[in-house]
Image (cartoon, rainbow, N blue to C red; front, side, top):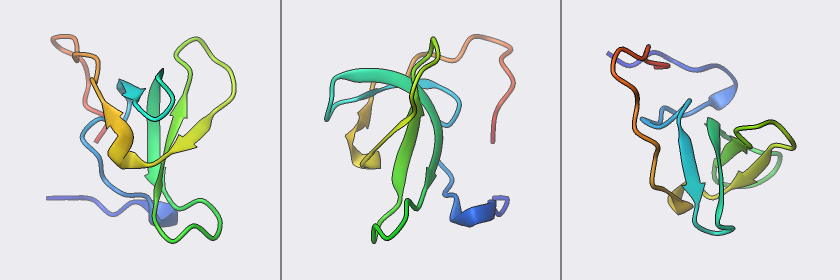
Length: 76
């Protein structure tokens, strides 16, 4: 069963994992898929793994998730 997310957040299987933003070639931790201001579609919110400035991208540009280590706790 899926749980409701606040602030119109969407479910995504890679939330909490490091992924590639193929639009920019950067890698970051997928923090959320949610609206951003007046954009008509939700965006993916990414944070550099070592810290830094969060950025947004189209969720369709996400690829190459890092493998989840055995025994890692699910973020969903």
